Length: 185
Image (tube, rainbow, N blue to C red; front, side, top):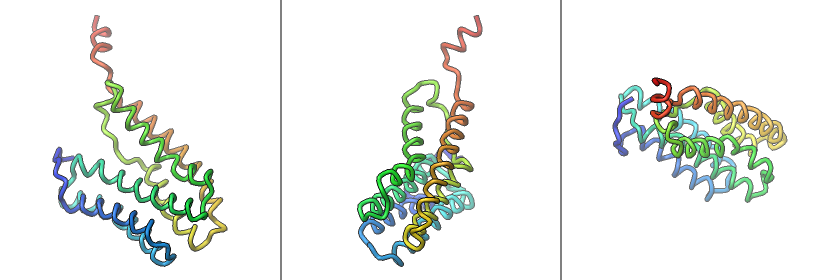
């Protein structure tokens, strides 16, 4: 990955567009438009990474911006559903449980010195949760009866993803310098 910190490149602009889509989702309460916004968010999530790889425009900022844009879109959409009464409070928190856990994990990893060097990367289970979340956002609109089952599936997959991310973080940790010195004695 390039160590570039450049914000304004094509992949990052594509990621940033998801933030505008999130605002639109909250402001527009029209079913066909909301479905189109979810599909556009899914498309931009796919395209930003593809363009970054093909154009060799991967960056540190892009690696952070992409998951933040994903989480912001999902948070905005499920919050709109909660406010509109399409989701209950419990469903809301199950829906975003993986997002809360990964945000907390990221902050903890930045606070604990021996975890700071760990590079966060997308994981297959995390991607699967995102796909299921986006699919569920559409199902809430077109097949509300499927919502409960899909949210249970999100909860199960989220728990698996949280475990997977935690295990990956633990395996990637760097032994603190003081521990290395003690081991050499």
